Image (cartoon, rainbow, N blue to C red; front, top):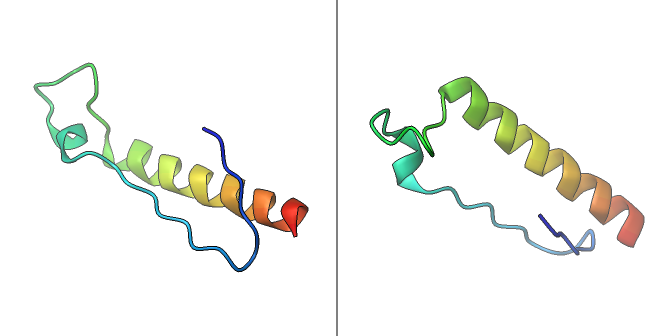
Length: 53
């Protein structure tokens, strides 16, 4: 994941709806994994914005 941003930028994070299907084991994400992924992306984005400003 490559993020280049500044404090005034908007950041959009998009996930596929097929992550919720337990039948697709190659991409299934539990609610806990989904939350961890979102939190990680937010943290990385915030860190990048702090160092890029």
